[in-house]
Image (cartoon, rainbow, N blue to C red; front, side):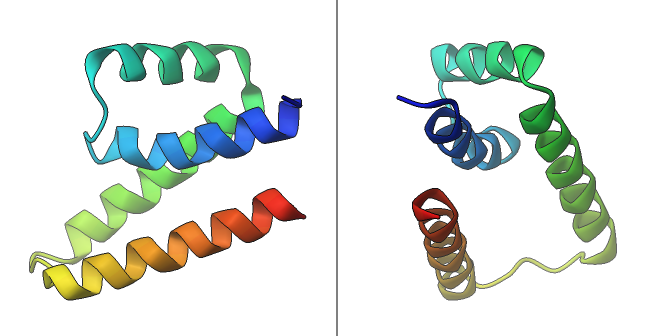
Length: 84
């Protein structure tokens, strides 16, 4: 597995970390990667900041159907990023 493939995998898992969707061992693994990988840490910080801004700006919850569509689009973008 190349470094790019590893980071692409971790970028997806960073989103899950921010959404509290990982179990304890996965959290530890992602945090360990973040300690060693400056680009992924920068991505984590950016995504965390954006998430906090959106959370402060939007007090309403998105409908589940919208959340699913956004997740699918994010996954498609990540697949495109991984393939390039």
